[in-house]
Image (cartoon, rainbow, N blue to C red; front, side, top):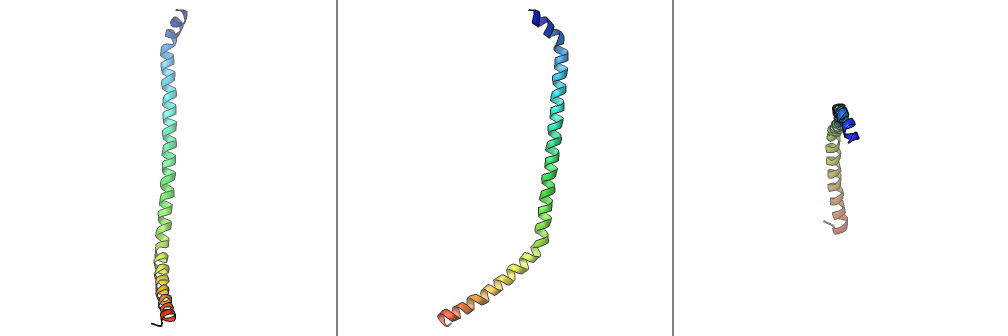
Amino acid sequence: MLLSNVWSGNFPFTCVMCNLFIHCFVVKVAANVTNSAQKILCRLYAFDVHCNSFFPAFVILYGKQYQIYICLFESLLQLVYGI
């Protein structure tokens, strides 16, 4: 009975403090989530720019590689089968 009277006197203060701590925690977590999301988006954008800058080189190199492969394959067929 003695503790209930003391605790009931501190109840409004306890509610205010709990709400304050919860609010601070939520704001901090939201700020961290926003910062990490911005970092992820920045990295994804950098990767996209990287891929776009190398795309013409990949197309040219793979095209030339295919042409060389066809020439080598034809000469291999001529050597092996005498076609």
